[in-house]
Image (cartoon, rainbow, N blue to C red):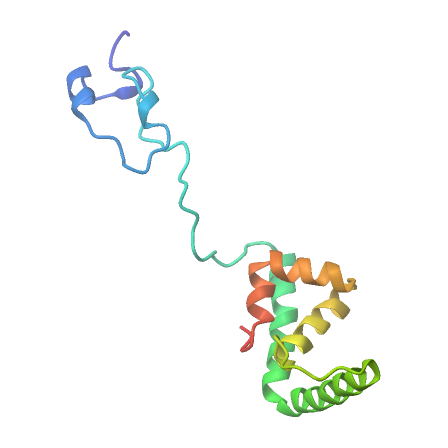
Length: 146
């Protein structure tokens, strides 16, 4: 190799003594010729994502944020839905001749899931998959929303 090359100020001996980052996936294949300060892959995914720079995504979040504010500022909506859902479920259980059981999901979670289904124009199955697959919608549809 002629001149300092890409490694610049590092000599062969200082490079050989240098410890590579412990989180570098490609540590075993580093050689003097290929040594780099750039990490090929960081297997640790970020826990929180920064704010989106895409306008369409910000609009999507704003739409659900507005609905969230409406639900929080009008608790009567949830109360009315809860009463209707409880009556409907009890009626359906009587028709089938089974005893009502405690639900796995709260009325708020059910209301939020139905809102997602209607807003996005999805089937029940597609709504379940969309909420499960989306970190944002999973948090939004959780018991306390965003």
